[in-house]
Image (tube, rainbow, N blue to C red; front, side, top):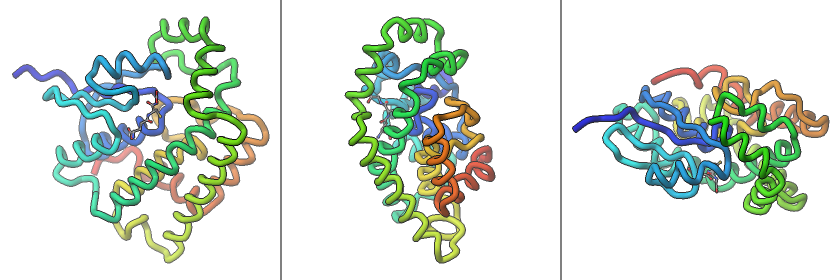
Length: 248
Ligand SMILES: N[C@@H](CCC(=O)N[C@@H](CS)C(=O)NCC(=O)O)C(=O)O
């Protein structure tokens, strides 16, 4: 059988895509990224055999995985267990996927959607024609994203409270001095927490997407600094500094 290189269809600044990307890197799986803008990712995702969301992985054996959790499990199986996935870690992964991911995404979009420079920031990361289409359709695209992701004052306030609650729970876990969330070893729980917290912590080591040094509005900048200063925020930033580039 002819094998084509493993391909990851993404939105470059999506944190679920970052979770999949980090899992693949950690497990030493080589892949090519196929990045697209939100809304325009639908067609490539569907064409790849996935659904409406990214990441979608098309493996070199033509297998298709359309969820970051499945991609992490697949990467781990390929690398004979490089990514620890014991039941406690999987339970935390699932909780972060359900609670933290949607909340940090909503908070991030609240900062980004009003920005005139968002499209230019993505130049070089996605096909140019996608930027041209979104430039012309920007009001409609923005309205669709706001409605689809519930980026409203009430939605953002709820998400802010949820992020605080998840960060507090992570802080409680770490309070006994453990190195990682489930004990002495780095696991999928740690990776998932850091990746899904990245839109509100903005670590410099995220390899693709919104530049970490992009200046946000003063209130958002202050909020990022406050989240960074929490035990959970410091923990995630430390994971990015020391684990993000490493294969197991
Ligand atoms: N449970 C999925 C969630 C993926 C997800 O929500 N992806 C977002 C990007 S952050 C997406 O593709 N949204 C597009 C849409 O819903 O149309 C996973 O872990 O892969």
